[in-house]
Length: 141
Image (cartoon, rainbow, N blue to C red; front, top):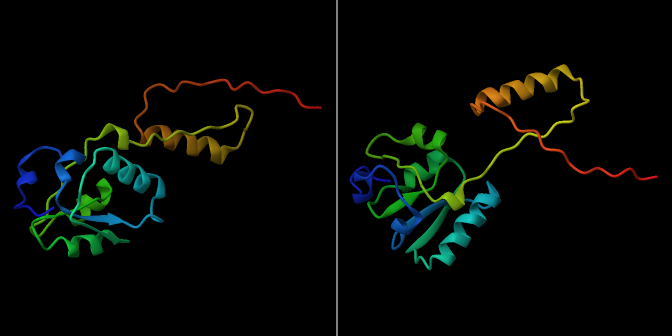
């Protein structure tokens, strides 16, 4: 959003705060799960937007934020990269829009590459303890 936007005064924003604005939203094919969640939540909250424009790259979205009443939806990495020259960012705090990431591997897989990937995954997400679940497998003959 523009650094002069009244929402820029707060620490975070909620989807309910974004009604009556022009939205700059990523194309659905960029992340269809998140796009659908945002649109469904918007419908459930009965939020009215002035318009929804779509972008593919964060740089494209930043160029579209030339007016005060516009807000763009970006990943945190893209927001950090583009939040300059009169633009600022605030996290969106709707818990229903959170995505959970999980990694499932077979216990009997001895691949060294997979082992390294698993360790990197654990470090990246700063997970202290992993809980292993058991799936009910049936023998089919």
